[in-house]
Image 1 (tube, one colour):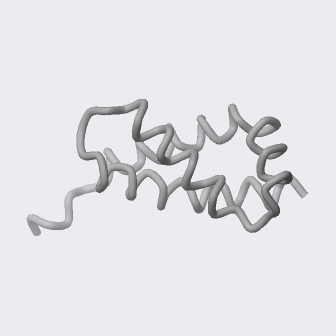
Image 2: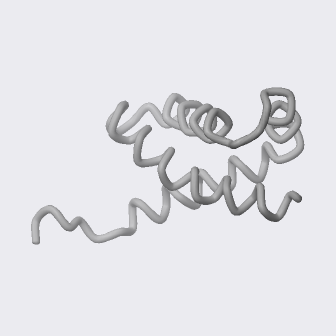
Length: 82
């Protein structure tokens, strides 16, 4: 079960980081991280009590995935200037 949940979290993390960056801009790292975590948990397809359990059991995994997504986004070439 957790394997599928982790895959969903990875996919949501990419979207969450983009949304947090768009809404809050540069800086405000902790606020963006909280926004990304909230986005992930909100969009998981489970009842609230299951999301609460997931947030507790996989909290460090969620943090790691968000950090990896941030690094990935920072290393992507900027397509706007091309």
